[in-house]
Length: 412
Image 1: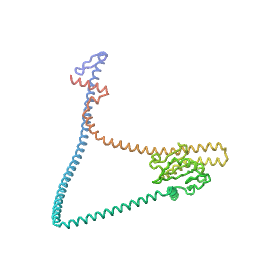
Image 2: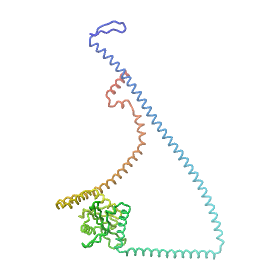
Image 3: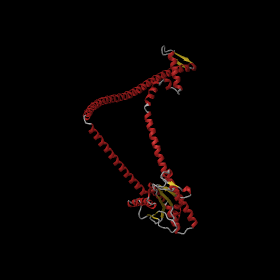
Image 4: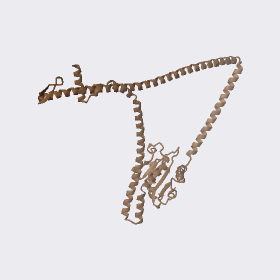
């Protein structure tokens, strides 16, 4: 039993546990309802404040943009008005000039009309004679120019193949000499010279060799230069020189073979850059245009530098007279690594081009997103208009039930 005292008459009485618990539940329910009502009132106040702040912010932004647009419109209208004024003034001035010129020509025509017939015929005859002289002079100049062009074409066509080839060879020699003069290539370690050895029955054009500070050769390249005449009667194909270049490379014990060529100028296969023709059973052979002469050497040098340690190991093995079979196996591994480094260099070059393309696409995407940002303002207005207690309580069953009970209580 629980004893309860009445707050009005101060009389005490006893109630059992069931009734006492019921009274406690009613008191707690009343307090809970009051708390719910206060929280609902607070949420409504916060909602109204948020809506008001958002509306004012959007309204201010809209007013600022509207003011800017009005200012731009005013400036544009002023420019249009000025343009119309300038155009009217220009038309007026042009009309005045045309009228004056018309009057002058009319006056001149009236004056000319008084000339006698013989004077007019004389003027016409002199004018026709002058035109005839100018036409003859122009024809003579055109014939002379055509003869000069034909002479130059004929002279160029008569240049022999050896002279044309030497022109390309001189270009490559000058490129190497320039790099050596500025220290880009170590002159004491690099040799680039004509292949003058015909003991094997054939010779290339140039041989590039480079050694390290210990005197070990780290790279060797056999070069063949082929140029194309503008009026070649029977243009040759690049592929027709592959076998000779391969033979020259093997006879002179060069690791790489490079054909520097201007043949087949319209062939996109050779115009794309450095072309690897190893797949045609010519290992470590490349075909390049003259502008890739130095880049080709640079790529092969870098690969050789990275693999220099393997060259040193091979040289030590030779000096120590190691087993020839073991030496050949390690030599094959070294060659494979050099080929792999060359392939990696090509892959990295293509990857860099791909990354540049991706950056361009990314910048275009950012540009489109910036242009689309103007639609965000309309979306903000739409969200404010659609804001409601129902959406705020969506997904929250407790608040949904509380608002529903509050609505039923207000209806009763």
